[in-house]
Length: 478
Image (cartoon, rainbow, N blue to C red; front, side, top):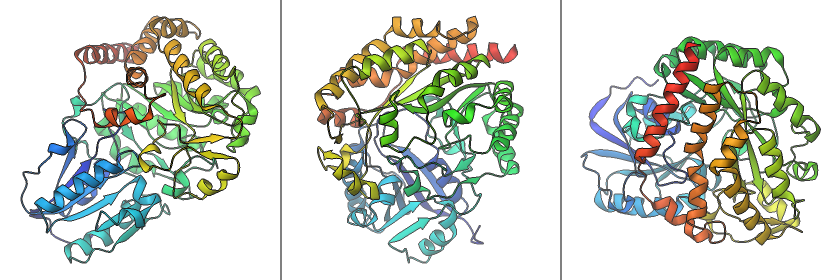
């Protein structure tokens, strides 16, 4: 890092803006804080826990406010930035994250500098410019090395306030080798795929002891040797369990599955997205997803005691009047531990945004709508009302108590593993029950209420999480 003395009289405030879903520990600001703390006093403020409009910094000598901005909280970012600039005119307002990576010029209307891509590759230049009062308007960190996030959880403002069931985030690789056309990874991290060194992982992992780990790599399974070695290190860390994301067909490997099982891996999230091959082909998932292999691989993974979680993309080309009923029956029969529902989204600022206009229609062009929680694009021949009503019915059945319990019996589980399955779903389903409660599927404008609603874990959820942790400890002993 740069050879500059840390100035404790200068503060940097990093701000997590309101978002939805809430309560999940985010990796990015923890890593940025760790980088900047070598030169400044750094604090993270999470505005998901309060009314964001009421936030007033108490710190003096704030050299910079850094906001993590997405499409979803674009309007809130503007409001907060204007307020902070009026309160502290000499402080720099810097935006980073998803939206500045996609639309940097638009973001510069509200910030003095924008950070796109990855922070670690440009931290030295950024800090030097900040200290020289010579910030450039744009910085973009390329994914061209094996420098991976090294978060410092001591910066987390009240760890227990966040959900514990989804775990503490860990990054072991960056980028993805696949080309799903709806995915932003190639915009955020370009086409390179880089692995963390095993030595770096070994140094990071001690702070995850007794915790549940959520490996947040876009595609953890690309390199089987890396999976096996990372699994070994996770086991040695003393974590109570972990989860990750990878392509379904990369799990068709007994050596990998044995390593996952031995290291207490609980579940792998796979972007199944659909059980219709035409739908998968329309978003260029034909190389990674073959419908005829789904059941065989899922059952194979489950035979190792590892659960499969899966994504569903709402509104894909080929959606028909039986799509959701067929999805429900398949996901339920296969014992998919949880389903993540996301609307088909092509973000402004990506090349594919213009390309898909030939194949469908954009229903609105409002930036905050491009969050995956709202219907923004409809392929030709797909009925919007069916997508909304079908998703509503699916959520109601899949995340009902009877649906969860019945699903837990459709995979071979021990008593404690089934109990973990059910308790995890009690926590995870809350997001989708809020979709129904606020009627966001039919009235997308209501999503703003969910974004701005302050987050607080209920006492019921706290008790469920304690029970879930106890169950995981019992399995660890066995």
